[in-house]
Image 1 (spheres, rainbow, N blue to C red):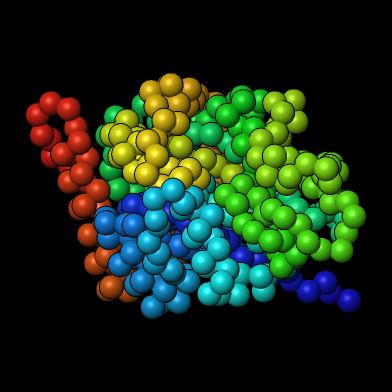
Image 2 (image 1 turned 180 degrees about the vertical axis):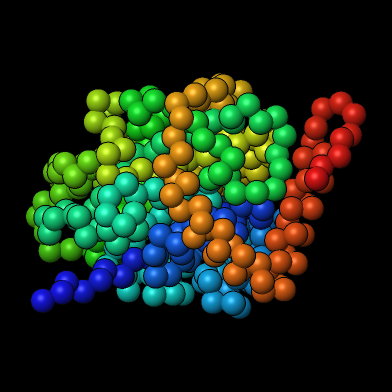
Amino acid sequence: MTTPRAKTHLISCIRNEGPFLLEFVAHHLVLGFDRIFIAANNCDDGSGRLLAAMQAAGYVTYLHHRVAPGTIPQHQGYARLRANHDIDGADWLMMLDADEFLNVHIGDHSVNALVAAAPDAADMIALNAATFGSDGIAHWRPGPVTGMFLHRLPTRNRTNGDIKTLTRNPAEYGAIHNHSMVRYRGPKKLLTAMRGDGGLFDINPGRPLWQQLRRMPAADITHDWAQYNHYAVKTPDAYRLRRQRGRGAAPAGEPNTRHDDDYYALRADANLPDSTILRYAPALERMMAEMLADPAIRRCQERTERIFADRLDRSAPGPSRDFP
């Protein structure tokens, strides 16, 4: 008897990620996610129009929301998506930011190959980041980031300790945070997580889930079965705009003190070759071409790229320069 295919959902909350959304959505459709839900908060770069066009064409489910000062944009966006859409209809739910791309190394390299490998005892799959640098590229240009940046930090580098999870039976949790689901309310006395090498570890019921599924000790970091590629800095000029955009996991209105020069320096010079994600490149190219064949999506994509280039130009120190 054939085991039924698991239903997988992806959820994201973004702000001003316009030029990068097309690839993010296309990549995760290629990986086999059944539905992708994206909340966009306070965008003024054309992201909302692009997501609306993608929704009209059936590629995503999109929610526009305003974030009040003092609230955490990602948590609020996830909660509003959940209140308005069937997020919990999935067998497995994953949360990723628009600069994070799931990369599966087992089976047919799909998200279903990964969840099918999880034993029944696993309530969640805790995957480590693979943090990519700038590859010596000084200025942003349009094109897939997964094909542009092909060097990462070594596996046991502490920046790769960050975790993103796939969670089984999402309805059994009270809320969605940016790294994991929290406030378990299901029937089990003890939850078990699977690492990215198939190893299992128990969740301490006496500690909040967000504390245990936020970051992994360096000795436990693994990319054996899967990783999520994190393009945290991209190019120096794109990073300037990231700093200005603020943080999705901190209260709105607070200064962005995390994305400073040290954050960039720690990641930019990554030099370990890793082109494993290029296994998806042919299918990604076809999916992006299919999406761009929709006139509304193409028009909105081109508009976000123009806005992004203009903002880079205006934010650059020294004389103005031209963008492609």
